[in-house]
Image (cartoon, rainbow, N blue to C red; front, side, top):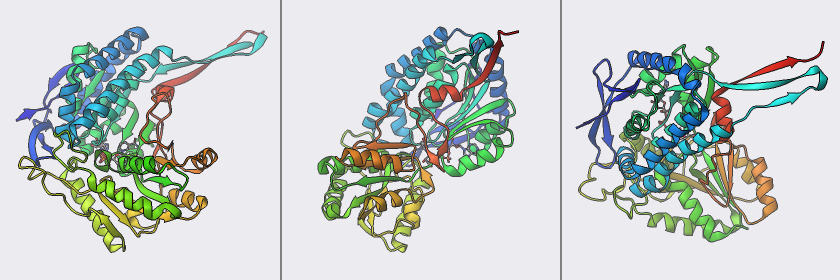
Length: 483
Ligand code: NAD
């Protein structure tokens, strides 16, 4: 049985308590590794190490910090096959997806911020004969970084890379559900020559490790990605301590299809937006709204393509929908299928557990991709985040009605719209209450843009210089030249 270890001050170590958590392979339903069940004691040691490492790292020339982070990116790419396999086993996602998207994007995170920090600048304002002023943007100290299970290394690295590129040190906690790639990243950090104490990775439960990081007085800022419920708990602790907070939380994203769309692309794109990674991407389009004049045709073709998605062993090339990450999430998805029935919805396809794809996966957690119709925008299934392969679909008559329904949840992470009408695209994009709008596309990423949600989907932005702003503290210095 594999045993993962914490990475604290450059050392690989068990939890001080000696306790372990089970780590499951969702495709087989079996325990395949043990993870340190760390607690407040381990966090204390990690925070002390990070605090001690901070002054030297903050003072390390930017070029040198950049070179080390580039090396991390190189090593992620060199170990792509191993990392992708680890993520596939840990998370249940298809291996090809981990290889093509998750791991390359994790490497890109390190590469981008290693570059960006060398281009990061601060402002000077000339006040003429009276003087001038400038803004120093200095690293802050120890960053607490907490990430979820759905895109394990991709989201974890999107926090670690900007935090340390900006000159902070960190105590980072991956999800206890998918800890394997973060463990491999700790080995990579060691091999890349990241100085001891700069990146500390502590494994364990959210209520133990996560809560201890959030409450620690020496942790000056918290960057969190996960559910809105947990984000609220973190805010309750960190808010009164006046910590800097970046929260990336849940979504219930609308996918708007107008009659003037490119039909083939809209159907294909909507299927992809709905079911990639088993619907377990915060950005998945889980509410599909279709203009009535093409509604029947769209539903027919959409359902036909969904039925063709192969639910299979994540290790197999042809698999389009892999295993659901955990038994809890599997049961939650089934529960929402039941709620949909109780609310009067009609299940057009799916609605139950999928047959095991092979003998190896006979105890795994697999679901049929599910499409539900006949539910009003305000019902629970259309309001609450499910985070699985379950989508709803319904018709609209006017643009205003579509926008109003799209904006009717407490979430505001992303939205997708399908239209060939340029004016409509700009008009609707501006009206949607969400942090990201994709027009005729989905999941396109440009690391220079400010990524994040509005309303209960988040506060804070992860991309580009916005991330470096978060991980630095501005100080204005006024130089008086007059008498
Ligand atoms: P979660 O909130 O259960 O857990 C996220 C992380 O927080 C985990 O590491 C967990 O251990 C930790 N945690 C739990 N309780 C804590 C506490 N009291 N204090 C500190 N940390 C604690 O979320 P999840 O189930 O792992 O992930 C799914 C959620 O993440 C979904 O809601 C999804 O929309 C969201 N998500 C959002 C984005 C985004 O960019 N907005 C991206 C991916 C996932």
